Length: 525
Image 1: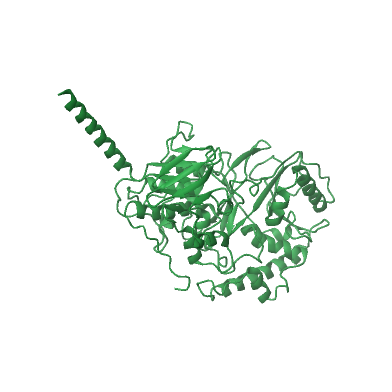
Image 2: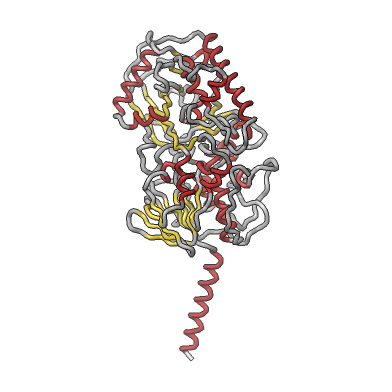
């Protein structure tokens, strides 16, 4: 009798465990707790909620239509969400390339700093969270006064009318480029570099060559894409979907809570937090450096640097394109050739924001002086500067932005050497004033960091939807997300957020609807 009761109890326990397992749904490993990984986790959790529809225009993608209040699922419920997952993050924090740090008594942003694409017909979901839900301090970035704030290589300002004419000429060439872009075949077969377009418009035989033309050119292209016009696609950037769809305004986030508050907000909607807002959910595991992903027809196995092993039904890889292009993570079996080619076909760009603290101000202040340019004969040499009179009053902090090869060069030298170079430039610009030594400097090193290997992806020449579909396409039970998988918004925070939703939807279709075939339409179809 007692034996029968014991067996019955065991059977009840097994049945209860099986019911719990079924309710939890398939098990997923998410690699990376940046915006895309966190967004994907939210979408997986919401997979059965249906969620509210919103006001986005018809024709937008599923991710683009996701509500900014967390991007809830659209359409009919799919029963329970996918909540049996673990997020493995290599660093000791959430946010990825959205990261604040303390500098000179302030919290400043080492990575993403602007909400780009505001004021248009469609609502940028990041702006809804930043400006509405969280109420972060933001400031409209007004670049309309660069003509009166462009400094010569050896000091002093250029005449405003002269610079204005050069800017107008550059704008005219850019506008012509947009018209030309609209005539090119959608496959990308006729695409060209922005530089080639400039040559077609007789904008210098080899592109802008004088110091003032080079710094204007740098501001228009490198400052946005972190790479020069010779490697940037015309067709994919003229016009740029971010500004075409969401609006032309850009807003600088200067809140002591940090831009990363957006990531924590999304995470907090499905991960357990304490009263302070810190994430305490055991499904988030920090300092877990993934080195090996083995995938089988029936599941996946992930190994970390500290020899931990995680098993699941699926894995979502949200590491940066730069990391995918290194050997940090080994895939077993090796990814197919089409996938490897798609990964290496795209560029991981580098955008470096250098902060300098001074004992006193020596730069102009007042309306129309926030941004100023240094027109060096060496293109991209400490070119774009910003003062923080509005954002951080009394801080005496300047920001200078460099990109690409200059970023890599600066990352490999000492901060003291960088400080000396920047001070030399400032003393040339403000030759009639006393420019003191900087008391502190902050130089982010995204390229040298093995967990990032750059800041964001850039548009290569000749790619279109086809290449992005390949980059995003799953390989067996291995799924991919990240800003680099966003066909229209790569390189932007909203691109990372929407990509997480879109990639999660692809996984959901397979895991819950058994629609596992991912169709990639031909490049010329």
